Image (cartoon, rainbow, N blue to C red):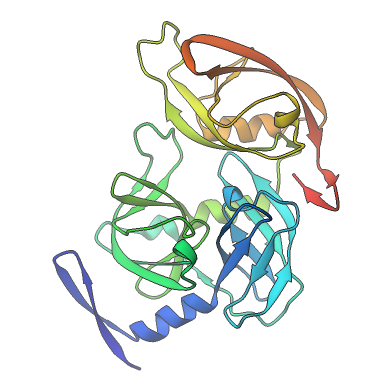
Length: 301
């Protein structure tokens, strides 16, 4: 087995079999394309064609998945979780080189981290760095993140973050300052066990902190990044850039608040409170949530 010298900042580490580890991760990383929405990355979770990615990567009901060997498949969307920005896809393929999932509770600062993805159209690009920490970040609610000093770019979202052994420790999701943020692999396991919430809203959101001089007590919200065409959110005229504060009954306290709300009865009316443009004025809108089922020609959540 070969070894390689990996430079991360001012530290140089010798990693046995690093070339083989990188190649194994590349084969477990897929290219995910959505109609008219560009492309991102995904992870082969199991050998029978289960793929995990970020929800914001897929905004069509029938995305396509391209494997390392050039094969392409139309994928079915199995589950979506807007609160955790996760989605699972299924392709009709078998004997695939699935990633080896690790345990994100065992991650320690200073560990080597490896990211694989498809940034800016470069398929299978690899970047390395070190883990800075694991846990929530100020301004992003209570959700835990694997925080690593790795440079990511558009197209890396949904790809794997792995340790020096090549075990998956997170799903690369976004950049905050100079840190790459990944959803911990243990959170991904919880998502796959739970599946989709019962109801579907049709938004991709990110936790944000509201400026303190707005004239109201709401200090936390969920920034709407994208709204799926034809979704309940779109039908209620919610727009990217709106900040969901909660419902008339209770404010959102974190990303899990939205997941819990969608986990209730499927088809029902919800009165949301939100901000648009003017942080001083709280707006309200009634949204008719829809249950799980077929939307167009594919499964939506």
